Image (tube, rainbow, N blue to C red; front, top):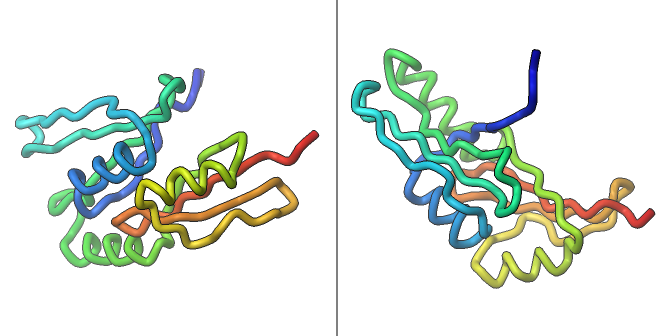
Length: 140
């Protein structure tokens, strides 16, 4: 029986760049950064929202063969760069304040806070191209 969602993975072009972005600019905390020599130096990097220890985001590079053929790997990287694969949605109590805070840390937004039927929503992209949203639920 399923108990809970513990991890979500996003493809990144460069784990160091992604780690710096999500910790220094977005404000997430590093959870794990381990390299597994027995798996060809596979690096497992996870970050998460402070105060929410049960859920982590894995920043995973697109693996080469034998996992993916080179052509497939290049296609995945290209789709990530276009911002059409996956994405993250972060809840916030004040979308406009979070927007200003993250913008002040150097996060480049693709959409300013906008009122929508489900609250207030803003969008940004990480250095790899992954789309992320800040969402403030509507007032009751």
